[in-house]
Length: 206
Length: 416
Image (cartoon, rainbow over all chains, first blue to last red):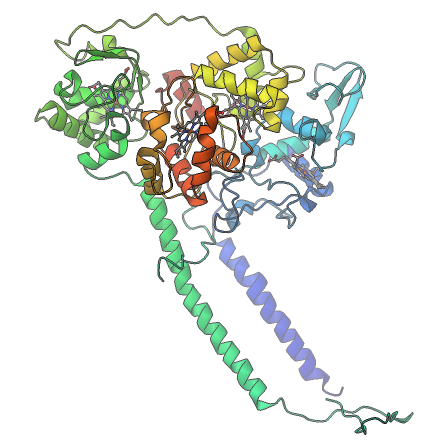
């Protein structure tokens, strides 16, 4: 090992090239696009809910990237249109996810717009889906003998709640739900959006 | 590259203690370089070639979107696209359900009257050519712009009424202003104010303004101890979204049957079994009556990338090659629903329709009478299921909406 300099230079060169092609060029390409019409920044409560989502690790079981119809039947499942880069401008860190143990959540606020549904589901998924393997998050809730005027009571079937009293949502659960309800990318794709159209149909000759 | 002392076969020679491997300059064999260069060229060529294919794919998508959005040109095309599903391509109507346009008193009254009907839709009984009809005609105020309404009304007036008047878009704009926010025409009785010497029209039945039972309204908008509110999922107007269905305008009998089926476990859906188990018979009847009477504009849009022309073909004619009858032969002209058995499909959310067709095909939904839908869904390939779902989403909602409902949709923000 006697030619350090060329080695180091070549290594740095490769690194610089990769940074240019994989980080800087896409960055420039994306920065030219405006925020899509119809996408709003997260409110303060929704941002707090988003932090919950990140820290509870929902991303390990849920993706946030519906696929185009030629890749997977996501639109038919009601998961929404294939996402485009612009859909994620306010998402830092993004929660794209790689695992689909549960359904994709990028548009869950549209197909399940019910706050009380989400509270029941977070308190005990098996109250709704007997077969669900999603963890329950009881520590986002507290049991009370009687609900106060400000409290949001969780709707529970018999057998899932406490013997007596009610289950009410803590702020964390309300925040997380507000974030889930804000997940809505059903506005039309902007004209100039970066999108993946896949390849032409082989049959249609091209 | 390293070299080790050559070994004689069969005899293991251990390198000495002081053995050091060493490197020397050993060029990469030429064939390897050739292969690498060839692979590089091939890769670049493929990339360039696929670049083309991407442009084609983009063009394909844009063409598809344009086809979905662009309205047809010309009166005849507009008529085929918007009216023929109900009034039939020859304007003869459907016996007992949809009045004829051919020689009807209203078509003869000229394009001005036709345009006003198009802008508002009709609700309630109407007498046309000696027969009374009591259906609903949707409003096309949102779906068609002034120029299209003008073209279409002139075409209908000329072809079916035999008149020669041509309506100008500016006149339609005027009419649109006058009629904006007035809701459907209340049957022939109200239309009589437009058309001179109309034969006597049936009176509009007094709408029993019973008012909504507060217990039912609570269920819909607030829920109760063990039931989430209906509006929280189905929307404040029962309009639905994605795979949560539109309920507004489904028949009372159909909604009642579905809720009973959910409760008894004959139709499977975790959300709805949870909800239905918390409802008693009286509540189910009240809810069904409420949603059946709700008139709400369509919020559905084609979203599944289906081929609308193919969807229209399946809905109107079916596909006998596949053994699929026309959807509208059971679900009524334009998919407005027939009686308690055949639910309305027009303006239903496309993801929901596709999910139901898939559920029947996979045996997950099996509560339809005589298994009628099971066989049809199994016969439809996946692309056709998407096509017909998208086509149904593109149809106007029947019955036509009330003005209050429209205002609330435009206002958007439900606090639910």
